[in-house]
Length: 265
Image (cartoon, rainbow, N blue to C red):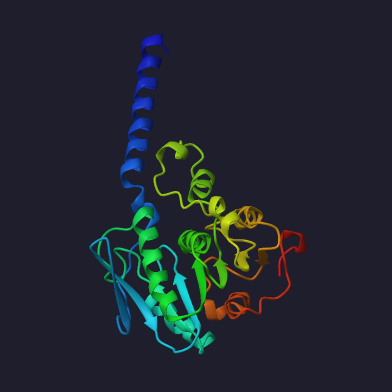
């Protein structure tokens, strides 16, 4: 192959790679967020945040206990409400429909969801003195942010990550994700600010978010704040009611199986 021909192929490869990087930069949120309509639109609350109507799936209950739930990137939290109601009959439940999800206005982004998270906390904290925060998968980002910046009673993280950047680097190591990624949800960076007792439940063989990300997140908390439960018979998308570890963590009775040194539960 002549020098000119080689340089021609190299130029096309560089242009193709650059074009793909530009595409990822412009469309990345479509790979992070997968908005879903609400299958059950009953019993919802409305928040007004930055001029947007943000909806919250709600199960009312009087008393001191309130639970805020942040779901996964393709989760319809109106359905999760029924699972949590079975587990926590004495707790009021608030599940955020991210912007663009379940009828909430706007488009999802880290900046927007952080604002919605704080607005929801303000509402719940006015009504309940013991606020538990739960984040599943993508929801770990807003959950840790809330626990790091507001007073919460307890934090529960289900199949979480340390940061979206770390996950993206592992999934696409050939791309300069540190330059491309806008919404980073760096839970590990905020974890040292959390003082609430924290339970992390991760799947040993998670194919979506490998368990090493939950382990890295666990190590980011101050000593004694968080416990990590690695479960061998759990999948990233296992329903809450189908997992004994999920149920125990949410009810505050998680078994004493901690860290990867145990080899999983």
